[in-house]
Image 1: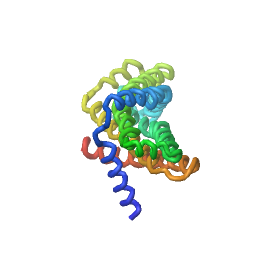
Image 2: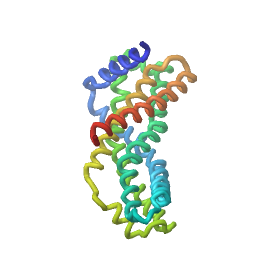
Image 3: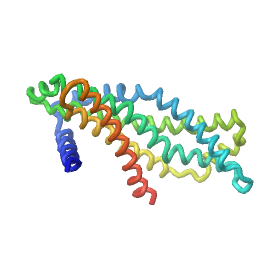
Image 4: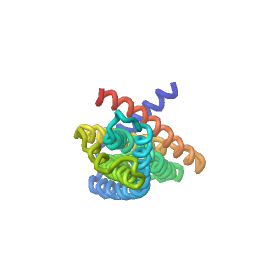
Length: 246
């Protein structure tokens, strides 16, 4: 029963978030600030992880497909598919759930325990919408850009690994990257990324908004935000894959 209680409370919060804002101009400025804080500050870790994971995927694929009947360009093809379909949209979202989700939950949770949210509500401000909606919009806008950058850097990392280790000729690797490329793969990745962005911001906002107690409870809320965001990302990854690729 506690599960249904939290699900109902979560959707009530979403309804509060989606109410018409008091002043749209304030929300626009806040959204731009959140894009910088939540999105651009994550560019470094996204870039580093993407390059090295692209290299690892290429090397592992090369060693596990070392068979005379398999063409060498299959390494580039497998690297491209793994990065575009799964690694960039899903793994990067899981990383952002840890970095961004904990930040959102701790920020809003701190405002709750220090009674700043209560002060906003006393002034007649829709605190849920004011605090969480700009974060959702910011992540929906900036996360797809981060994922596209991750795709490029992941494939570049695979290309660099192929050149440095000589596990596959570069011409064959490039041919495999271009082989039977489908634009729907990019669309599929973008749909997943947008859904994951909403999950990260809303779930983290939920745990932060309903934090009670002190600093210890803020830490617990931050941990729960990361855990549940990751679980829901994995769950919806399965659901969206079944719906879009079945």
